[in-house]
Image 1 (cartoon, helix red, strand yellow):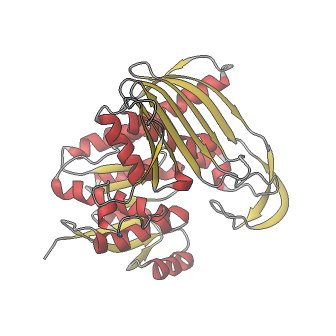
Image 2: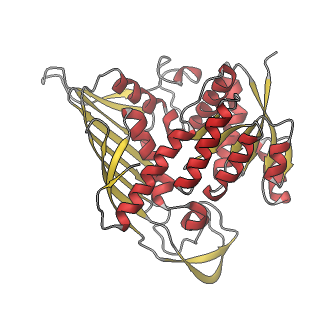
Length: 389
């Protein structure tokens, strides 16, 4: 019999649903050293949390995350709340000896992220593991891109271009949800989706950003208030409006370790683009390109080939020897967004049982947080070049 690891999850909205799907499905497709048990779900409303637990497959309910952390049937705490609560929950859980999976960005400030990373390093000395949930690392095509770079297939890296384009708040009448409030979200498009492309670029290249020059903009500065609005969902308008105090878009250039130049664009105002996370890397011996709206494809150019036969070619990343793909369907049968979370919890469970440090670590999350802070500082200072701490 495989050991059972109890999971307690805090939050049950968009990310909570995605993580629940992962915990439900992971043991059915991966040969795990331990089996997760969906022990308890925590939310502020007893009624809504009970309904979510029944729908999503959780065995019990709590309305106070502090009680969840104390439970003997919980060994993993999965944090799917807005960023303003990440630090308090994660540090308390790590101190209590619970493994922690925390949604991105790690925190709402560098100071909070530093405290979380320090708690994670101390907990690791006691065998307690932690990971930040940058799920796009677990897209098979992104993992394959990292492999190609690590194998030297691109040669000397020279350019990185990363974009994350969405359009869900183009309508000025979309309500002032928590993702548009600095107190809860920390920042706007920058932290919400910009954090993803920062992590993706650093993951694929294996290089960290050393400095940035940035612009940010808030296109719609007042939005309607609405009752019951959460995350990406609206609610009943109240007739009043509130101030949007986060960025709607962020644009910055940067330099990676080793000298490669990079450009980044994160916006929720790209009309017609639903979830276009894109990255292209150019090197002396080749290039690769990826767009999440075609997530099962990676485009690769081998510049060492003769010109008569060189050019970008499409790799359908569904073969058994592609990262993660062999656990699922026959070649050519594509994966979806939800599979990235299944891969994430699979890797986390494997690290816990192996006694190794999972990636991305809280230190990785802290590095991303420091880039976010440098972007904000640069944008506030007339785009001056700003070093990443």
